[in-house]
Each structure stands twice: as C-alpha cells, then as structure tokens.
Image (cartoon, rainbow, N blue to C red; front, side, top):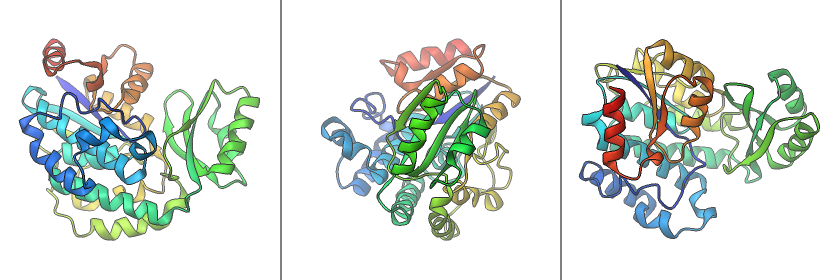
Length: 309
C-alpha cells in the first residue's frame, strides 16, 4: 500500500499538540534542538504561551515543523515503505525532512532561517484570509488593484489569500457580499506565498545553496513540490522550489491529486490540527483521511495504520 503523509502548515498550533510526540524517545533529540532555537522547551511553551506567542511567525513555523518531524520519527517503523509526502506552506520544508532529503536537525535550522527571511521582508501589517465558494476569476478580481494575492489553491474553490491587512479586510467584505460560503481570517502574520515576499524568496534561495542534501528521497518515498505538484526527482535541482514557494502560490489541490495518482489509499496528516485531513477527505471522500490529532494515544494511531495496511 501507499500512504500519503501530509505535513501541516502553521495556524493550528495548540496546547496539546505534543501530547503524543513530546515524550517519545525517537524525538528527544529534536525537542532538545528545538529548545535551543526557541530558547525554551516547546512542550512547556505550547502549554502556557498566549495565543499571540504561539502564532508569532518564527515560533509557529518551528513548532509545526517539530511536530511533523517528531510524528514521522515516532511512527516510522509502522509506516508503509511506500509513501507519498507533501507539505502545506512551511510543511513543505518539513516534508523534505520527512522524505529523507534533509537531516531532521538541519530541517529545523532551515525553518528558523526561512522564518527570519520572511519576517525581514514583511512590514508588520500583513495577514492571510480564507475564502470558500467563489471561483478563481472572482478571487482574482477581488485582489486586482489591491495589495493582496492568491496564496494557496485548495480543492473545491477554497482559497487562501495573503496581503496587507487593510486590503484583506476590504476583500473579506466584498467576498461576503458576493455570496462566499465562508470567509475567515487565517492566524498567520506574514503574506506567505505572494509577491509581497519576493525578497524573502531571494534571501532564502541563497541559504538553500549551502545545505547538505541527499540526491533523492528515501527508497519507496515520493515527494511532491508545492508550487506545481510535481515529484521531486533531483533534490539539487528542485530544492530552489522551497525558496520560490515563499512568494508563489501553493497548488495544494495538485499535490493531493498527485498523491492519489501515485496510488495513495489513505492520508495521514502529521499535525498540528486536522485541516489537511479535512481538505483531503472533502476532495477524496472514498479515501480514509486522519490526523495525528485525531488519536488519544500512539497505540490508536498504530492500530489505524495496521487496519489500512
């Protein structure tokens, strides 16, 4: 069987996000290194930090990447050898680690650098917005002439926009007037995956030039690129897509399609949250889709994996 592993983006951090992974021996070194990067233990941080702190860009990116890497390490022996891996936003960097192209410690370091580049290119008045129920042409028209753009293309006319906060507030009002089924702010404070972060793409591209890469993913693993849904076949040539995706839209619908075309018979989101599992279930209702956050114990996750095998 082939399992599609989905690495979450930021936005769903919560106090209990490390309940299954925080004490896992397989993840101990990851938590130790993340503690150095965050200057505090992430397990304590998520329990006591205010929402504002949890959603600060650098902190959020590190927490989400840590969870993905830790969950993958914890479940690795139980995961099928044939895997597809795709990551949503910062989750794509985590996906390169999960796929074995970048060492886990180096992946955390890389995410810290990525977040800093994005913060440096931002002005402090940006945000993101989710809209469901309007076609692409309508969304593009809403963004036209405003400092906003499509950031993520999800299935079924579901879009994430990034831009200046004032522009997004205007777009939200217009989208509701046009009959959008859902319009909600996304708790991200940078205009990810839009032209507003072009400078961050350039800066991060320079950083990527120095990282150590394996030539190809772990045997049996297929990794898909966020900006086009294509398989990563040559890491050295494709790694710059991690820089490009900072300022170009994520084609998440294509990534899910690619997983299914590669033979995936189930989706497992590594968390935090279950947004990606819900998106996958909506797009492919006949394919089981779960998140680590669905399980109260590691054994529960292992039992589910054994049932779908």
